[in-house]
Length: 463
Image (cartoon, rainbow, N blue to C red; front, top):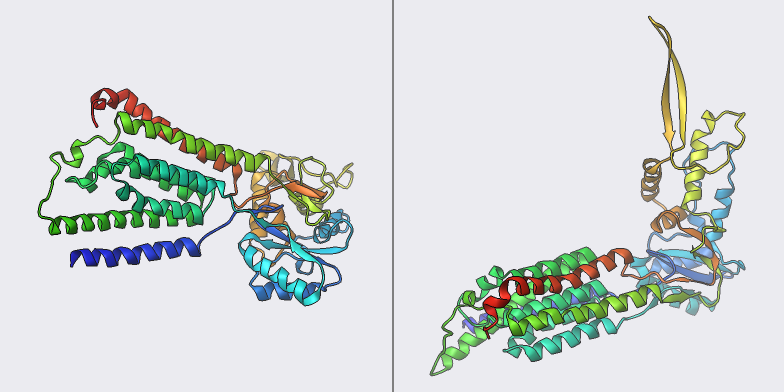
């Protein structure tokens, strides 16, 4: 009866976790802009028709030409307003043959369906810049790690069942940081394998610094990658625990049916998880983690995405001389309008872009007992606080302002018409991911260092 309950409970958990992995699966997408895909449609198709197809497919928060409004800033005729005109160049290609629409990345699949409907319904050329690129090498590295550790395990079945769930996660979320976490979890399962079916099995897992570090580090990597992968990682741990409970119930059932039973003399507390043989695999985990790091560098720094069918469209420019306005031009335009009433009319160049630290002050004079005293109030300062305040205002806008696209790319990004750009991937924040991958690479080295420095002599004769 106990075995049947364990089997039913485990089956339910396994199905729920597998269903969650499938429903929340994600595929890296190469695109020109961070956080946005570009939809291009021939100008013969009215913008209203394109928006109808996009919204009907489920796309929301679309940045389009018709959605643009003049920013809610007090404006003065003497202030250069060319920014307001130039920003509209974001909505057509250089030859002005196609209209461009910017769609948030979470609606990538819906946008793909909408483009198919546009082409089918209007017969006009249309497409997206993003292309799905499933990185098969990422889950392949995890699979090879799984097979090697399974072959090296004393009880392969005890490793293979719980180890199957990390593999499913790597298939569902084929990202480099996720794969690094999967490799560390597989290593933890390999070390746990040596404690199997001994007394105090579960408590021994939490008493081992090696296993604890691997599990905590894996979850930290998953949550650092994204909330979704973090939640899936928590579900993964639940599935692994249920796997061990099911295997324990199966073992007890076989023991119950058997004429003879065997009980290991030593408890799990008395068995080292890292000794001469297992230490080699601890250090050997550096190899798949290094392979992931190399693949990450190749995909990040050597892969480029070509233009959308040869069109020259607005793209981030690696030079500092963008021909289209960027977020810095927006900051400057707002600054000039805000400070105009306080500028001297005799100032030589009131239209120049502000520099960090520029201030506008107002002198005040007050009659006191000691005579007239002068005080200076700072009205505006062009600094991070000023720029961050503008970003917050943009984020709160209830329409698809082109400035939302600008701020999502970060400061210091110039924009020009181009036929190609460095790919932006769903892995996001490449610098941060590189740090996470390097950190994951240090973990098995650190654990081996603990063994080499403290446990090698103690356990060198253990089996």
